[in-house]
Image (cartoon, rainbow, N blue to C red; front, top):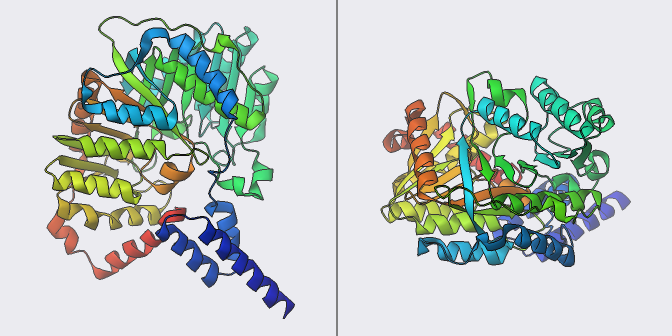
Length: 471
């Protein structure tokens, strides 16, 4: 009897927390049903995975203001108040106000679609570092790829370069701690994003960094979808690993550095507000005037900035919209924006992997959304050469975003993510051509055949979709 009363009180308390959270109705209903149908278990899952973090902050407002001042001094006159193509001024203004990230000009951006040249370029840049190297990855594995990086970082640290490495503790749960300890003994300052054991028993278990950022001497940076692991180089059982990453030189690197230092403060309580981490930016050659915004988002931000920026960009597309994502479990705003663009006559193409890398449930849930898109005219391509891990969106030969954000609730609403919003014709055309080239390795979903799939297949996909909030 006492057990039943205690369990009832736990369930009632959990339901009060869910309702008072004032979340989206479908999310609240999901958690209410989960808690009621699986008392105890549902409560534990909610406390660990379902809580809203927006009452917390990564760093204090005055500390962020200090970083902003250092960034502004470093970038000088590169802050752009109005883009030459005024089509995106509202988008850029929204990102500036929601994320405190200005549009920065005078950048040089290079796109990588293969890990090996990207990794070699990154190693070459790190080998030339004189002052500092700051690195943040979701995954840093202890295979031969990881050891290439760790050996170089130790060498640079012993040369007197300030080297810091941050990784997500849960994504690297099976990596032996000796790998990271070896770097620490070699002089590299290594920090996990949230401690594994304490976070296991708190709501912080769901507080994950999915960002991939490298900053070298404040002038050269990398970001995108690639991590440090063998599979990014060699692929997986069913084929190549297709991904996208970018190298940036110029003022936008200062914003990447700001993001890393804010996360370092959050994890270590150490405030690295030294001006040497924000050196004055050199103006790139006149033919490399790319305008870029480095946009971050996370569970403690007031706004879902990357998602809001994507929705705005999709809504402004006029001729074409090409999207690549490894996981397609869109939030309602993203789904509605894509569908509206197609209905408005925009050539909308969505590219997904034909095979799953982590969960068949996730792939089945992704396919359940096809019925929302195909009737609107969205063309859906399934990448068959290997696993597509690229996270890109390009439209109208004038805008592209490349980063770490997947089109699923975890990325759009829960993870710490980073995307480069790039306003540049040459870069947009380059990404457009990459997408069109990738289409050669895809199969196109036939809307009529899709409607004729078996009832069992439809049911499985619809069932998988129910679990979208926790996938």
